Image (cartoon, rainbow, N blue to C red):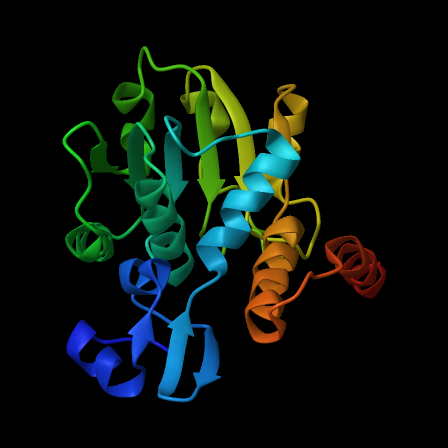
Length: 220
């Protein structure tokens, strides 16, 4: 359920979570006595995946986000809500990149948010270190897809997360591992966002490990 703007969203639900407002979309609805409550669990799924798979805490992190679509908006909003230190967003289309930058939630004065073109990466990130790269583009969904960005153009990348989970090894992840970087695909994000939705619906504990086992079996 995509939310064109806040007024229309409030016509549909009586309450929106902070994440749903920031992302501009709802993927989980909960019925209550006075109406529907809307949530978005994508950002939560990404945050948990980064923490569990790569030991990344978004608070204070320096994040390079690739893409400017819906998945990128969820990732960017979560980074800002959790207090990342710096957020760079790259995309092939300058117009689409500007659209995303214009709708992101207002961040604090101590958070730097900027866009970049992929061919400018080597100069934009000169002197930076401990960078976390998150791929939110569709590149990687096909085995023959190239990496969205050459990691060799980035100085001292620390960790790489690719939201693509099928295939399990994308060109970006393959390059990351060749460079000796910690890297993970998007299966963990998929499971954690689904587990969060299930927790909202049931109000109880969710067997995340069992969900991981089922997901891995389905994709094997």
